[in-house]
Image (cartoon, rainbow, N blue to C red):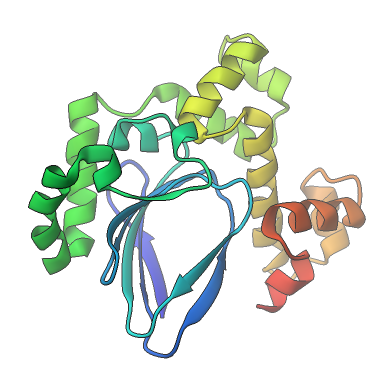
Length: 228
């Protein structure tokens, strides 16, 4: 009962999930993103960038709609550095105030798939758009570029890159690169490529290195994720 599609704003993805049965537990893998989420039970929430998998519990009948903002975009939408949201799920009211969110609540509940993207787009316009550095660093990290080379590419020394990355992504470029490499490896493995070949293609030393890295970040080995 999970679906996603392009949201039409800043490269974001709009996802929906409905739980018609009993309590459901799912594993959400880290991806460098920040999500604006509406829950039919919990209201408006913000899911910060995770360093490891987050175990989500959905109640019977609960409906979720989320706007997944690409790495580096969240701070411009929410008005806080990403590292203040790292590994956290917080009510939107904690960031924008009770009255501001109360004024939004009825409108969002009536049509969250339309209102969440519109809300993010308006916040981005007011902020002058996302920090352009975020897209450059994220693209390089997703391509597996070494951190020193990323720093040189964006004309920052490594310490400055680390500081800016924490504000944009919630963690430094090394962690972002590691997370995005895991995502790339799992996407490739899901096409049927053997794990040993996936490891070589994605820059791991060997299959054992891939397995250790996935276990550290996802909490389970890649075979468990692929089976699920």
